[in-house]
Length: 149
Image 1 (cartoon, rainbow, N blue to C red):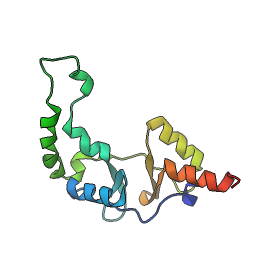
Image 2: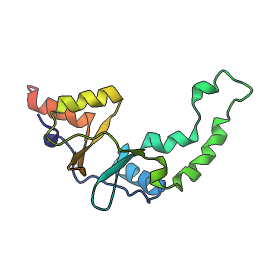
Image 3: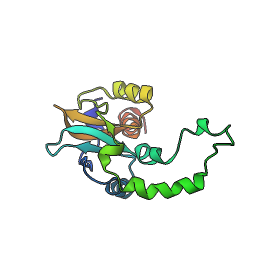
Image 4: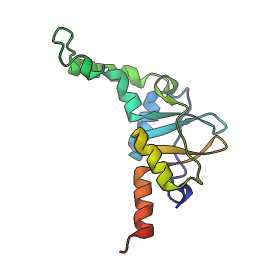
């Protein structure tokens, strides 16, 4: 089975200059965890994930958990969320994300995702975004193709 058989098309996208706020609105409206970032011609340049939005809010927890002198007030740190929302997408996105071809086998794609701990990955053709595929899409495709209902 190929990625093209299970991928999602018509994906919401963002541009580098968009605000993080606009990306979070898209994520919440579609119940998705990542928005691909593209150029005006559709070329994939990044991926803005929930993790990228939240990462600027907190330090590496392991650095502070055993250090009571430099302990952080995590409740107070929430106030920084508004500032993150005002940033531009290019400030928080993961650049040049790994992508797969629509003609890639789904289990090969799943193996890349497993190695990198990704739940979803952009699908590109000639550098242009054509869709997204999630681990759930792969599971659903395999189930309906092979499960005896």
